Image 1 (cartoon, one colour):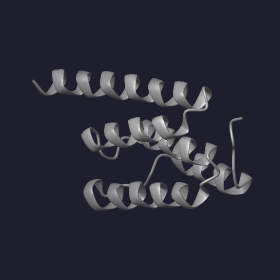
Image 2 (tube, rainbow, N blue to C red):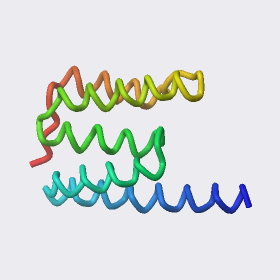
Image 3 (cartoon, helix red, strand yellow):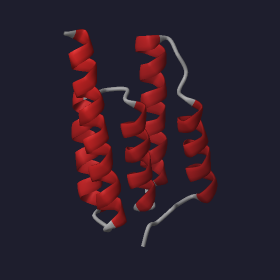
Length: 105
């Protein structure tokens, strides 16, 4: 049962991530953010979804919210799993902060 649950979590994450990336590519930033937020309610602390949400907020130029999402993810990982974020998440966060905005127009 646990393996089946893990398989479904992976499928949900992959579908939601693809939806977010598609919305961003089409300029539907609000929809991308909404999908990512809903998916993260079902799969909290999911790294690929958190990264997709960060990219969606950055695409709107909202770097403040990128910071909020990153810090909430990092705090949750430490509090719940006693671990640090993946290097990919930290690298993405640094890149988005350095650029200030990655508007996808």
